[in-house]
Structure formats: C-alpha cells, structure tokens
Image (cartoon, rainbow, N blue to C red; front, side, top):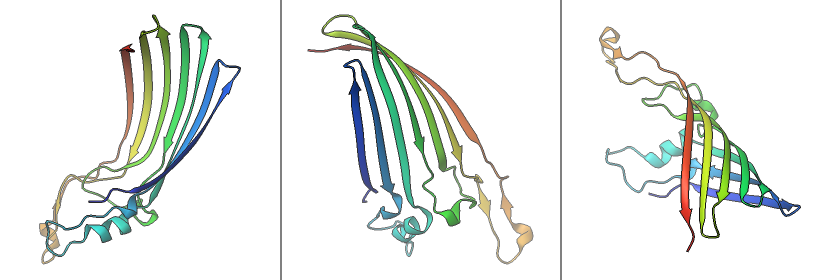
Length: 169
C-alpha cells in the first residue's frame, strides 16, 4: 500500500511579540494511492483510485494572542475540499464519503507556572457527504428482482470540547 502524495507549506508571522498569525496549505493527491495486490481476482484498486479520486486541498488559518502574560486566546478555521473526481460527484456509493469539511476553532490557554499549563479548546465542524445506499443487489436477468436500500444523503454538525492539563519537564 502506498498512501497519497502530499505537499504542505505554511507561513506564520509574529506581531508585536504578542500575536501569532499562521496559514497552512495542504494538497493531497488521492489518485496516486497504490495497492500492490487485490483480494478480489482481476480487480485493480490502483485503477479504481485513479478513476474515482482526485487531488484535494486543505486550508488552515489561525491566530493566537497573549492578552495577559499567563493567558492566550486562540481562533482558527479549516476548510477541506472533496477528494472525489468531478465525474463521481453525483455517483452513489455504498458508504458515505466526505465531500467538504469546515471547522471553526477557539481556545484559551493558561500558564499556571513555568511547568504547568491548562488549555481549553472548542471546535465546531460541518461535513457534507456523498449520497449512498447501504445495500443493493442487481439481477441482470430480471430487473424485477433488484433490491436496494433507499438513497441516503446527509451533513453532520459536530461540537467538540477538550481540556488539557500539561506538565513540562
């Protein structure tokens, strides 16, 4: 198995010694994924990956400001595009595949001492998925015998909170 090729670069700047602003860009070429052999005779996952998937872009932007010597405020945004090739955007799959993701993040950091800190973070994310059916069986001889689930399509909204107690040594 060879995972997708990726290119990443980023830039950050410090303003007034108290504010850090950063931006990162990532490009992943999912169509370059390779699988040496298939458990199903005659099926080439390499060809399938080239046909169905494409390169995907991810953009991350964030800022951190030290409002007090012991407290930092953080905020960020993440956008990630579809991995599906344009010809497959309306295809129906057997499982949901993310087609677009957006995340908004915020946090507070507190220095308790030189070696102890507490971070509180919040993330709100939305993910859109491709349409999918959970099962289907097609009978080429008699279409009346075809069975399949209904078509599902959905978007998720997720809230996540994290508290971290850290020790530096």
